[in-house]
Structure formats: C-alpha cells, structure tokens
Image 1 (cartoon, rainbow, N blue to C red):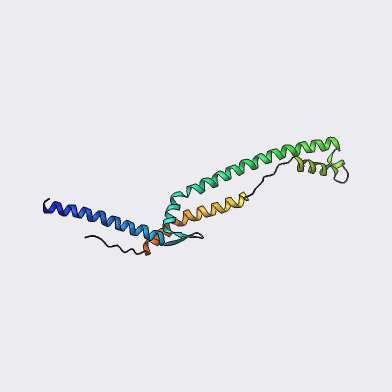
Image 2: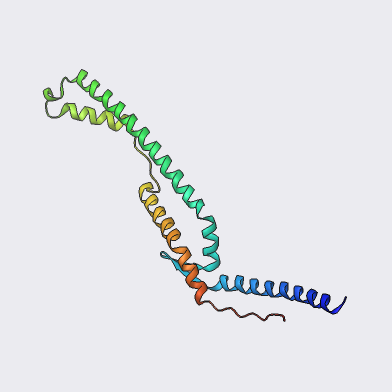
Length: 163
C-alpha cells in the first residue's frame, strides 16, 4: 500500500473505533443517568425504550375502554328488559303501582331486579384504572422528549479517541 492509501485505511479504522467507543460511552451513560417523567424516575435507557413501546399500554387502555363500554351497554340493555318485565309482572300480580299498598309493587319490582338484573364484576375498578392509564400515558408522551433533551444537554461523556 502506498502512504496515502495506508493513511486512508488507518483513518477509516480509527473512525470505526471512535464510533464504537462513543456509542459504548453513550449506552453506559444512558444506563446510569436518571430522568423523571411525570411521577416516575427511570434511566435514560428505560425512557428511550418506553418511548418506543408506549403504544402497548395505550392499546391495552383502548381495548379495556372498548370492552368496558360494550359490557356496560349490554348490562343496561339487559336491565332495561328485566325492569320492563318486572313492572309488567308486578302490575299483573298486584295491580297498578299507585294502587298498591305499603310499596308492595315497588318491593316486588326490586326483588325481581335483584334476582334477574345484571351488574358488572369490576375487580380492577375499570374507570379509575382507565383514568390512571390515560394520565400516565399522556404525561409520559408530553414530557419524555423534554426530559431526554434536558438530560442530553447536561450529561458529560469522556471517551478516549483514536487519532
């Protein structure tokens, strides 16, 4: 190899080595530097990964909201049907509501509703869970870029570069 070709080759190798050293220093810094986004403190590496994958909890939230709405609507339709049947049964058995004594009509309707009506089993308190997920997702999305930029501005990295 002549001198210019050898220098170009060595320069290319040095450039690759410097890139790898700089990239490794950035990865190491991201693994230990902490940022606070919303009410959560995490490493820069975690924030970068979470930024890439925030759509997963957003899809979970959307699916939960859709299912909650569908189940709530089905329960309302079922209970409206049961209420109409309970009122009809009570009217047949007791007579008109205003003609019943001591709330007998109302008690019978309530008993039928308690026996045949539907309600949702809500182990995770869906409405408050949806509100919390919305808040967490939107807080993260609105604050992540500023937090990462601010961290990058003040983070110092030392790298031994090849000449």
